[in-house]
Image (cartoon, rainbow, N blue to C red):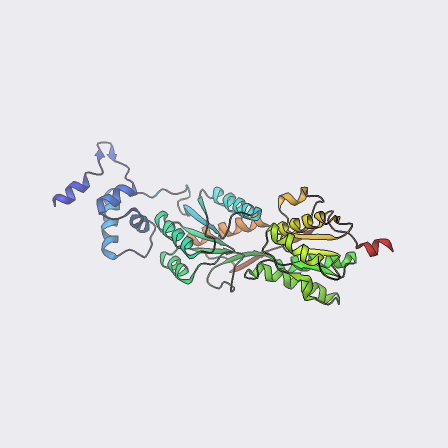
Length: 355
């Protein structure tokens, strides 16, 4: 056919052998979009049989070979998806994912979907176009239709710190949040504190609920009543720690210590205390959760629960890469150990110091 002949001129051959052909040239010759060719190359299922046959025939005739890492059997691109990117802990997870991806010769695309359906759908459109080989979802929720689309595209999904209901259809990576919450509270109890305020994280996140449960469990074991007025809302960011601390200081009997369930909220609480003319830990002890690099240099250095954010990112990336090679993870849920790091922001309550 004349049309076929015209299209075939898009790729030329030399006497030395076949020219290197690109996906764009294959798409032009087949009369389809570049994302369609990408889906055929990556073995996706959402391509009609006729289109698939036409594209595969052209790929075969032109000797197309997919660019891939040296190992030849590892994924070429991972999508790392956050709800928001304006947090230091996101940087730590990105660092871990990129370290594992670099070791495997794999690229990383980082996105934020802000829990908005429009953003998530736009991200999905872009993911189809770039034919990503795996998705790592961090403290975010994808609407069911988008989760179904990932399954249709056969793109493996790994979740870090699930939001909403427990995830049952994808491997998850987290930390021992309950144990960390209990360790932080036990530390304050051992120092002699009995009125311990708690600034919680977003209740939609399983990690937030686990830290609160650990706080409650430690008080229960010590025989200290759990008082609802000592538990105030937060969202993991500085401003909510500042506001939560002010709320606790406004009680008729304020706490002698505060456990903030993120380092950023702990730093916000310390700023609220500073503006009141109160000193940490002389007037009130503060504990955080995360062990971000900055808290080692705060004034005072922060006692906190270290969660291995970078290691969580590495493990999630390696799990996604394994799934891309059809290697199933050894366990569907992995929680890496947390560790209490005692620094200068905690001490015995003043009443105990005066005795």
